[in-house]
Amino acid sequence: AFPFADGFGALMTFLPLIPRLGVRSVARKPRKVLLSALILSLGLAFFVTALTIRASMLSTVDSVGRTKSFDLGVGLRAAEPVDRLKSWMAEISEVRHGEYWSTAAATLHRAGPRFNNPTPIVGIPNDTESIRPDVIAGHWIAANFPAGIAVNQMLLRDEPDLHLGGAYTMIVDGHRVDVTVVGVIQEFNAGRIYCSKSFLDGLLNQEGRANAMVLTLNEGSFAAQRHAASKIQTSAIGPDRQISGILLTRTLEMVILGHLDILTGLLMLIGVISL
Image (cartoon, rainbow, N blue to C red; front, side):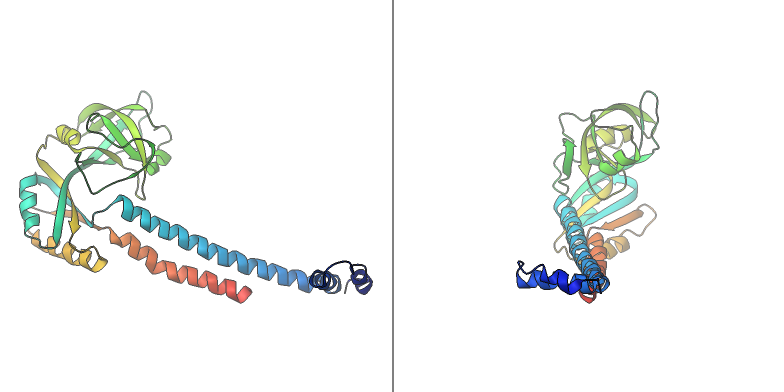
């Protein structure tokens, strides 16, 4: 015990009972009290961390669902006429609505540096209803300025010399065109560029065609997405049509929620044991 612990406690008679008992306990057994306080602090820290991680991950799920309202993204190895793709999707009863986008790879240049591209570029119809991005700087692509491109924050992180308002030369499929970065969006993808579909189609010489489909289903559950994806994959078998990939928008949610309860549960268990 700390020397003169009892006398030290007597000097604290002006304090209320509980604080006075606490001061006396610290004076008598400082190591035990400090160890108990440390364990309690760690338990509280684990508990708060679990709640913070859970809130952050659920916020990510909500953000993806809010900004991308479609269920499936289907990539094709070669562009096809949009009318033909519409007829194909009309045969899939699970599909309620479809949009037909264009994708390619783009290289950005500026006087001096060349960026570590190629970077995926996505051409989106001006009347899209499937994507409503969170714009964190500038504005989203607009029909009245087709040479304006938007990039996500991941591309800005990867390319420090790329910035909002910058003018660049973009090369797509061997064609060079001057563009301006008009907006920066937040999304949970690797670096990506967005532009008007008509603008990109002009560079690719594929007006009226598309190599990506963005589909909204009658039912948006993960099981329904898997079923529709399987049905689309099966119906695409043939030498003249090959699917390069299918994105299920619920996949991220299922991965996060599948690990979220385990992670937060373990952290809370540690916190409860410590407390």
